[in-house]
Amino acid sequence: MASVEQNQPRKGPPLAIQAGMLLLVTAVAIGMGWLSGGYLKSAGGPATVPAAPENAGGAEKLAPALTPGSGPTVVALAPITTNLASPADTWIRLEASIVYDAPQSQSMSDDIQQDLLAMLRTLKMHQIEGASGYQHLKADLEERAAIRSGGHAKQVLIRTLLVE
Image (cartoon, rainbow, N blue to C red):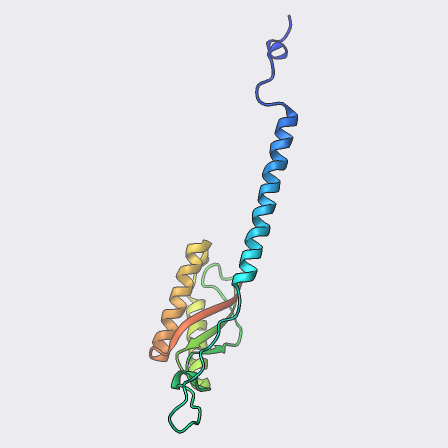
């Protein structure tokens, strides 16, 4: 007896049409990537700062927000390496920076770093798993930094987060 499967005709488009469609989709993807890359390259120019107006005496004066030493300041913290609460043999390394609304003393940055170290020691592995765990960790770090700085720390920038 002959097998029924051998006598049935093949379903679907021929192999040549499938290969042609694959090439077409690949060409469209390459073209879209090229066009979006060109668009982003042309749109990514540097932002210009408007010139400060001259006062009546003719001498130029910078606006208070543009004077050096004022405005947002980014301070890099020393790397924090510690073990997690559970499992105890799991280590975490965090390299972060703090964005302040104005320049702050180094002692405030040191206090924030020690507070973040104490917080990292209480974490459990399941609390930082996945994208939502990372977002919760970042929100907790920002909240602790804001409390420790009296509201001067506006953001915590996580540069490196390594769990081993």
